[in-house]
Length: 250
Image (cartoon, rainbow, N blue to C red):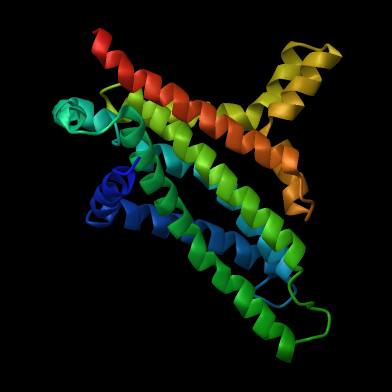
């Protein structure tokens, strides 16, 4: 585990020395800013709660698209170029490799979200000089929503990394990651249509990413939701390690 920070730093340098991270960050911030502007009518009628809800929901939704693109090269690119063989001959374990790459992807995703906090600062400042109808931020939803967004970012990074471990093609990796993350969104809608029994419906609702996220947006400290995101992340990382290990049997 001591080599994880070294591997993480290596991946972070690769991200921020290429235009990919900057392009994805620009797209991420632009899309969310457009919806914040539309929701709040150019800062005239919105509230900090409105802004936070837009940031959280669109942030989570955009993770479905951005995370697979950001992570598609992490292992698929190593396999395609042959550098995976050099990497695994170093004195590092498969867990070192997976956790190092996962940490770099997660930190990059979180770096995209941090600038959005400026909107809350603007609304807090606006509340001091603007109309009384614009209340100060409610820090409960801010804290629980942020915890949820970080957890979903971790889940998205782990999903994309797992997809990248399954193939040599970065395009296929991105597509697989997108389909898997989309499945987390749609399972709560599609499974009850296919199977109408009560138990399956309850299972689908419990596995649905939006259903788990809603209480956190509302300011509830939903520990079950956080445990779901983090345990699923851990499972995907474990499966990624097993996928990396499978090269030994080929």
